Length: 325
Ligand SMILES: Nc1ncnc2c1ncn2[C@@H]1O[C@H](COP(=O)(O)OP(=O)(O)OP(=O)(O)O)[C@@H](O)[C@H]1O
Image 1: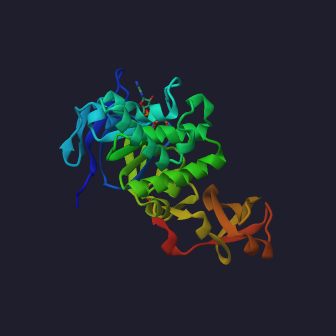
Image 2: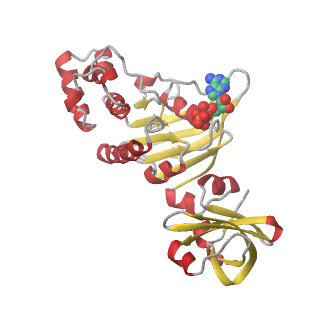
Image 3: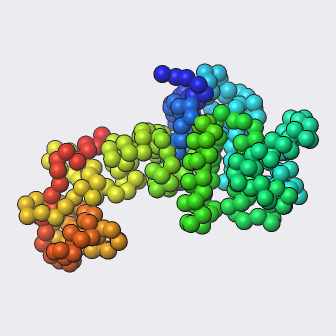
């Protein structure tokens, strides 16, 4: 069912001058009101996809529909999308409130009305107290909140975020992550968030779209993509999985579904790492396959192993996911 402000990419291709294909025939429906993370390694085409949706990059082939209407040829401000950039790009000589109100000024909204609206946006991102400051007087996290308020003041149906958390320190990153999720829920609009961080995508996304080499490799709920990777690339990129070559084919299995047992595949322990709640034990099995088992800490220390020990590894067949590529 399509409805509301769904965003649809239809056979979208981006070819840059010089021939590089950054996005190759990508089709995808981004459902209205969902938090979607575009996830993939550097150079896979995430930013190009986002910039085409925003209208900052022309599409070479295909079309982009928002609420069923083709917006491919519209300028950014007329699409119903707004973009928050990686570098927050605030005007250094304008106050926080003026930065937020800027796009309304461009639209000719009178001063009282635009400052009132800017005030509402600053409240939304919890920045009311700093409305009169200049960007240089703000921390990185605060600048980012202003950039968010500035993007949201245009009432977009879809907010596009390009690596919005990458410049923040780890502590702030986790706090802002929760803020983004809260904002998206409160506003009920779609967020499309580009990241190369698996943890970030798992924490935030209703839907994860994994890209690889200019194409969508797999899309689904965070749990589905993590638990049931369809390809070796997704299994390895999401992490926490082993890729096993078995007589019946290639399979992915979560590392925490592998256990030490009395019966099972013979292997020799190659490394043991204490990770807090778990111990990460790697063992080499037949065919020189390294298999990672995440073993609950108490269980491991009830019968600890060391490199060089012979062990047997077991798993439930039901936890194996056949890989298509
Ligand atoms: N303006 C450009 N001109 C030519 N090639 C480009 C241009 N922008 C990007 N590319 C190429 O297109 C491909 C995809 O780039 P893109 O920035 O979309 O990837 P990305 O997944 O966002 O990467 P990153 O995570 O590093 O930002 C890359 O091979 C890149 O070199």
